[in-house]
Length: 174
Image (cartoon, rainbow, N blue to C red):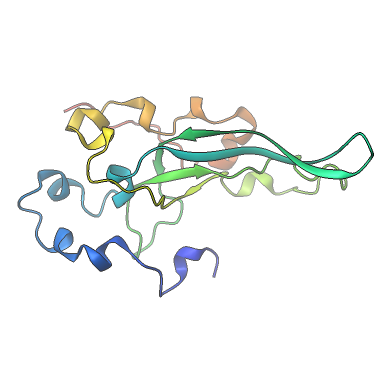
């Protein structure tokens, strides 16, 4: 398996909420977006994202892990693992704490292919709510650039790695 999302036994929202997938007439947002947006895009909240994990040396010369402070974010991006099982155009993304120089303590250039994989990854946060700030109305999401992972949100040294998940056209307000 390349990711945990390839596990056939993985629990999905529709396992418990099949009615959402079979009867959308009472919910215009589901009618319009079901299949294009992962459930978490509308029903998740901000959650912890980590940055720049490194191995460093303490004052005694012993290696230890350090990282930039974690932050609470909610970012919608393009789906990096789009498939028939995950057909969504937009998904929630989380930042993983790696950087090109994460392992410099052990030697130089130990992540030579750093830019080949995004540091913003497909996420399925477990903080699901029926009502969230982004699903209050169409324009709570549409036109709300703060919800979408844009180039300005990504560190310049990570932009090449994340070009496939960065949203270049935020949906227009309704």
